[in-house]
Length: 410
Image (cartoon, rainbow, N blue to C red):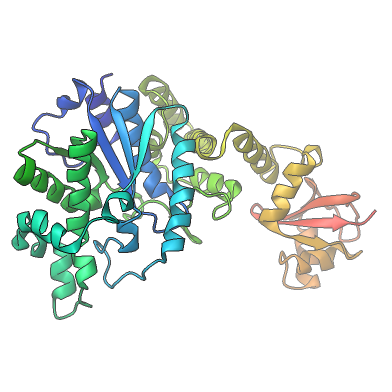
C-alpha cells in the first residue's frame, strides 16, 4: 500500500493544499511538524499526529521536528477563550527537554532533525522583523481568523498583541525552515490549519516557492461525540509519572466498541490484513473485547516499552480473575500498591473492607461477604470469620471492580 492510500485508510487525511494527495507518493519531501512545549509531556492527542509523522518517515520523507521554544513563550491562542498564562523561560526549557526525549523514544531508530525556533527568534530585531516579514502579512488575513473574531466580539475576553501575533511567528517558522532546511511541507493537527496556511502564503509572497500543508483530523469519540483522549481524571499523558502505565493501559482497554477500529488504525502500525481479521473476530464476539485488548497492548508497548506492557497486562488479568495474584512478582505487586493504595491488616477482615473503602460499615462488609462478593487473593471468603491473608501483600476484592491491597505483617 503506498503512502497516500495508507494515510486515507488510517484516517490521516483532513485538509491539504495538494491538489492530488498522491504527490506524497513521489520524490522524497522534507517536511516539518511542530509542537509547543506548553507542558512537560505530550498527550495521546499529540500521539495521533506523531503516528502520522511516523508514516511519512517510513515512506522515505525527511522529518524536521520543531520544538517551539519561542512560540511556547507566547502560547497559541487558537481555540482559547481567554489569554494563556505565560510560562517562564525556565519552565519552557524544562518542557522542551522532556518533549524531545519523548520524540526520540517514539521515533526509535528513525532518522530526524530537531530544531528550536527560539534559536532564530532570539536574535531577530523588532524593526527588522516588521520590515522584512510583517510587511508581507495582510491584516485582513489575521483579522479574519475565527478565534480573533470570537475574542474581539462583545462577549469575548479580548486578545493581547502577543497572542494576536502568534500566527505571524509560526508563519515565519515555515519560511525559515523553507529557506534554511529545504522544508516544503508542514504536517499539523486540524487546529493548526490557519497558522500553517499563513506560512504557505508568506513563503509564496517572499520567495515565490511552493509550499504545502497536510493536516490530520481531530480524533473524536464516536459514542460521545467529544474530543478523544481524556478520562475522568483529565488528559491521558505519555509521561508515566503523569499517567501511570497501568492507567494508560486501562484507558485504551475501555475504548468504545464503535471507535476501536479507528483507534487501531490511528494509534498502531498493525497492517490492514491483520486488522481486518481482528475486527471480523471482534464483531463475532465483541464481549471478548479482543480489539480493545490488542489496542491497549500495542499503544502501551509503543509508549512505555514491551516489558511494562507485559507487566500491566498480567496485573490486569489478575484483577479480573484471569491470573493468580500470589504468582505475581514483587515488582508487579508493588505496581498494584501504587494504583490501589495499601491498608495495614487490622486482624479483622470486615474492618479492612471498611478501611479500604470497599464497604461503608462492618455490617455492610458482613453482608458483602455473606453474599459471596468478597475475595482474598482470588478466593471467595466463605464466611466473615474466615482468614485468608498470607504474609506480605494481599489483594482484597469486592464485586467486579473494587480492589484494595492489604499488607499482613509476618
